[in-house]
Length: 88
Image (cartoon, rainbow, N blue to C red):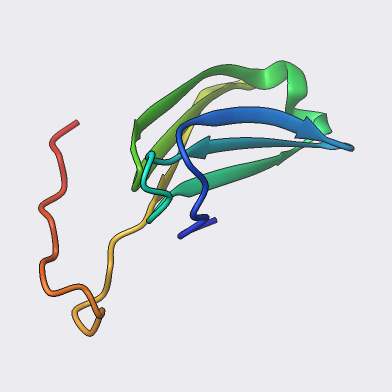
């Protein structure tokens, strides 16, 4: 999910879903990853890079997988300044 507008980082369960959020105190941007409970035991780690990038590492029976959620404004965004992406 992009542009969640939620402040700070978060990780919580709602019914059968886990929500992993990366945000900031200004509640301006924010990204999130929503997981079904079937992935509950496969989440090895979560990484909150900033309010535009979030990663989760999943361990499966065959490989380790990294899911990356990135939000970056388009060139026709209302924002006058498009910030550079950080190097990870």
